[in-house]
Image (cartoon, rainbow, N blue to C red; front, side, top):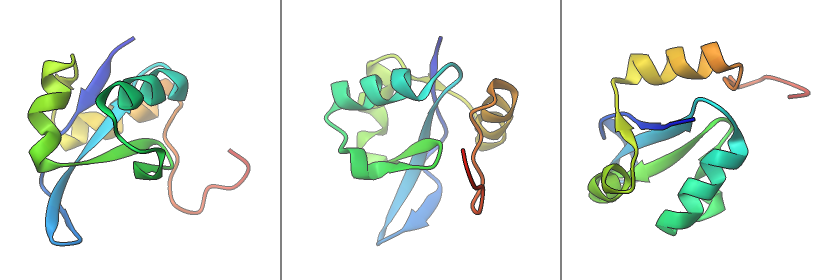
Length: 89
């Protein structure tokens, strides 16, 4: 079980963001985010959005740096990927 983070390249709300994901479970992901003090409202479908100024904190806490494509691949392989519009998941 590992937590992964992609580079902060996603613009929104005047900032750039990273995605933080788990390859095992949402419970593991929530536990990691709680440890960083990331509010649950930052969770979106299958990942947490993390602002660029918190990137180093996540890596220091054990998140593995991967590309954005790798984040999608890991979520898909683990069965945790939820796309916009998915119902009943």
